[in-house]
Length: 236
Image 1 (cartoon, rainbow, N blue to C red):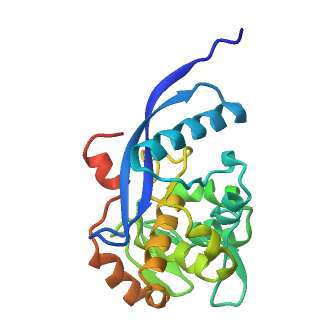
Image 2 (cartoon, one colour):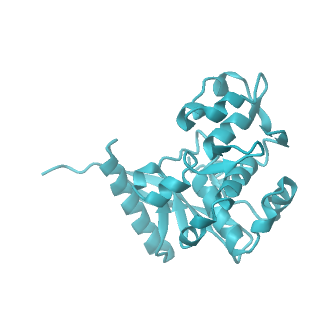
Image 3 (cartoon, rainbow, N blue to C red):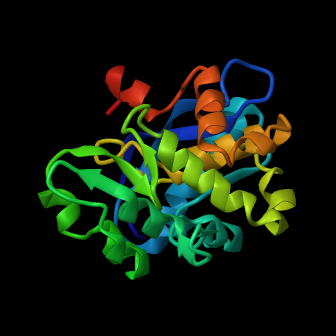
């Protein structure tokens, strides 16, 4: 009989909020991770995580956004797949647009990353060797580094806004996860941005997301509950 190896972990769950001071509520959920790199092990962990979430919060619909989910919708919503039509009229994945917008002390933005494969763009050596990040430059639109996730949230939400064919299915979900997300490496998480989109959609605020200034004001209007705060609380 195969011996099952597990390890106790805590994973974030991102929940859209409609009647509260948060657009997204981030919470930590205890789960037994099935040890191993095989896809089936990760799927077991996802299934166990979602069972815990359903039981704890009474949810029926929970979506895992990583490629490990095997869900077609997850693939379409991945930042590697979801595309935004930029000001130049061309389409880029959210991941490419994000990485190509980064500005550092010693360089950037590196616009050639717009046309690289998304994972290659994310792992480009210049993103590490160019010093500390100082902001973002998205086709001439300037963003500051802080609040930390504002630009990424704007980018992802506006990309999804351009795909109304996904709305009906997306808004059925009550919570989102990504077991591959590591808050120690990055604060930006598409599952969090997706939860924010659902909250904004259900609050009838989608008309306020395209303009950067309006989105910044909207983003600032609500209390922030993301993994940055969980890091401060010592969860990771």
